[in-house]
Image (tube, rainbow, N blue to C red; front, side, top):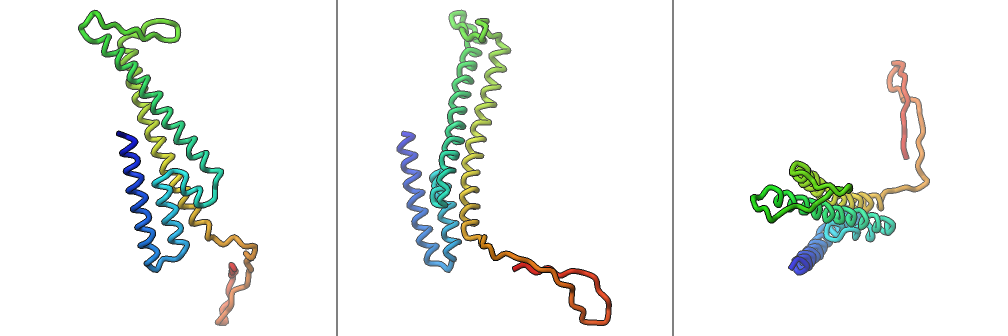
Length: 182
């Protein structure tokens, strides 16, 4: 079910992007503006696509590693949270047949307060992992956008400046410098 939903979302997103790109080409946007919009949209739909469009291939493994580690930490913390939560429920219910068998590294059973604290700690860590996933996702979109903008930045060797004394249009004496950038 989740994979069908993911395929549908990606399919509709790619159709919407292609329609918007065609609409952008009909307007009077410059080539660089169209490229920046296209790169940003693709980065939003498929993480790492903006880096590929910008030909920054070395960033793609970093994007997927950071997002993969976040997803792994979400799963890890969720599993531990559920384990502590279930043990906490077993310890606090009135049924004598349900007993927690969760032990620490020394083999001692956790107390009820330890189980409660563990549940909250791992829930907090899970939530922070979700935030890191969203943060890395947004960061790769921003990175693709900035790289697309800088692609058209003039970095030629013909950068120079010169200092001139200011011109005097009157008989008043002036002190200063004029800076010209070319």
